Amino acid sequence: MPSSAGPATEPTVDHRKGPRRRGEELERAILQATLDELAETGYAALTMERVAARARTGKAAVYRRWPSRAQLVLDACKLGKISDVDLPDTGELRGDTLALLRHMAITMASPLGGIMRGLLGEMTRDPELAELIRERVHTVRPSMVHVVLERAVQRGEVEPWVLTSRRATVATDLLRNQFLLFGAPVPDEFIVDVVDDIYLPLVLNPASGSGSGSG
Image (cartoon, rainbow, N blue to C red; front, side, top):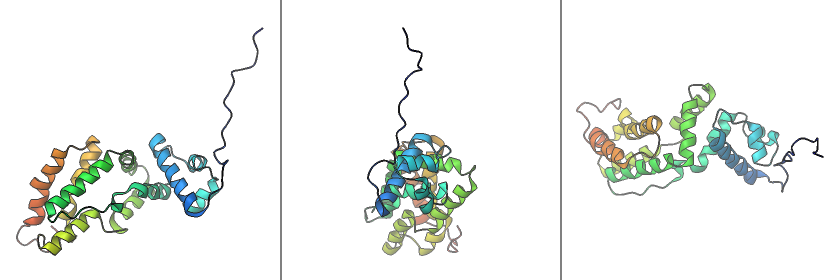
């Protein structure tokens, strides 16, 4: 005689069971759980509750460290950010810029790149996220492109005022736009063309009278 019971269901797994972690170990587990959630669900569907469950901790432990979802996500993305990489000094601006853009392209083709593309797309819908991204990009640290340009200034390749001009970030801006519009991988031919045809002429041979730094 067939059973009247419904189909068997899988027991709910309590991800919080396991050894307790504290301090940096717990924080790193939460940040890694955030990256994993972003890769699976995207920013729009990410919740503090899901992150806490994946990290095997309580929701309160997440909120104590990160008051908002946007702050948590941006801190999680630090785990693989390009600023943690020491780019080689090739002895010339062209080589340094190619190395920088190629490393950015590799990052863009990784799972982290997909996460960042999704976050940039969410900026128009989440004002807090947009403000935090702008703050992180412009005020937290010198960007790698400025590190590259500072080397060029020390070599005498570039005038110092170029560092504070709009042209300083043209190469990375174009790479980012290519990534946002067409995704990854970014063709290496695109990178070489940007460096040789656009960026180097702008910063190595600035137009006369551009020394104000606003060009």
